[in-house]
Length: 301
Image (cartoon, rainbow, N blue to C red; front, side, top):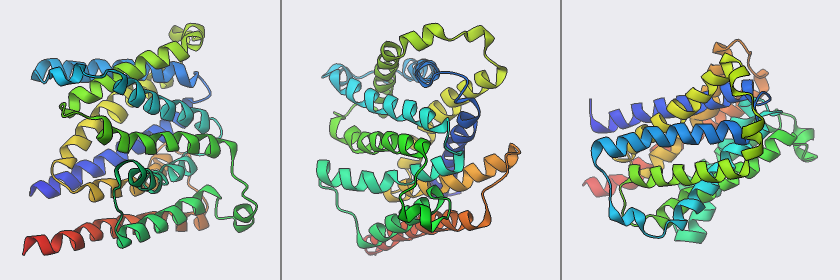
């Protein structure tokens, strides 16, 4: 199997694991405060990544420069996760995951503002198609709701979180000073954990951790180990083997994977008309994958 094929398999697994956080998160969002569960999530993920740093000896003195960078990135990521859980209190997981597919569009715009990164016409078309599919799902295939801009409160809350995520992506490139990615992520997780602990201290203290249902603990461990630590490893693995456009393209698979998770958990799926929106997100994925081949083809001659 080629390195590129392994990279694609890694991103397929990545998108499936990320999708699980929507379904499991939606099941427990009303049982524990968002700040409390995410503070614990960041703490566990930081411990795992810290162990990797210690085991591999990847410490670099450059990581100690300008520690404020970790507060910025940790704050952006923490805001994203807290608002995700706030949104999942009322937003269906499939609709929330559709909101997530708007992130590449926002990242492209913010990337141009911060880094002057240019989007190719084919990629712009793919992003537009993906956004159209996402909006179709968000408005539940109801044209009158779209025209009246009737969006659920949960989707709106999560959209603000996705703006934070979209800012985070180009800011990583802007603020990194050559540190190993695993070490840079460790700093971000520590900072995010500290910020979440300070912000949600009252919620953390008020949570009866011993009385939480087993499902909440399952969701917490899944979020920390699979939707955080494991996806980081998979993303790093794939970015070393695939162009960035192909890596970004897999974002559009998330709603389809969420549908699979929902069906597997016995929650049922959306009505058939909504599935058309999911189809558009898959078309966007295929266009983004094809786009990179078109861009790279002249280079291989």
